[in-house]
Length: 132
Image (tube, rainbow, N blue to C red; front, side):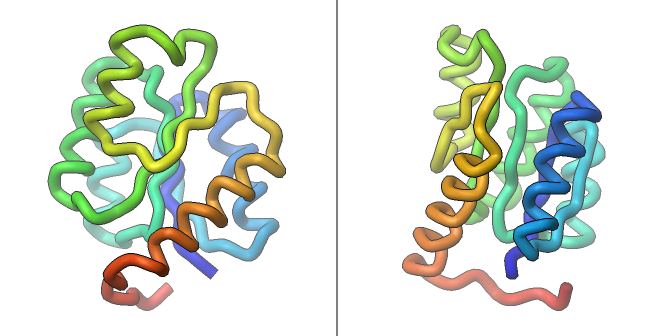
């Protein structure tokens, strides 16, 4: 079981990702904005962050702040149709994303990518474990 933080300003998409991860047995926190996510992560750090990168600019700035404050946490980024624009590619690279999931994505692919990132993280220097 791992703890995830899901950041997406689309309530439906965020709810779908959260429900999928919880059904797979993970603990999931969720945030509708980067500001909310940063505050939540400081209270309850996650093993993996899954974030949309097509959100209002102020929200993305806070997601980048989260990355800067917690550089060892792996990020999975999601994006809609504009995934290949220079702006989204820049954000993806700046976040050091381990994986990119273009929307719409298959929920099985989401779980597969989450498992891959967790396995990679387990192979790296372990992060301190937190109480759920």
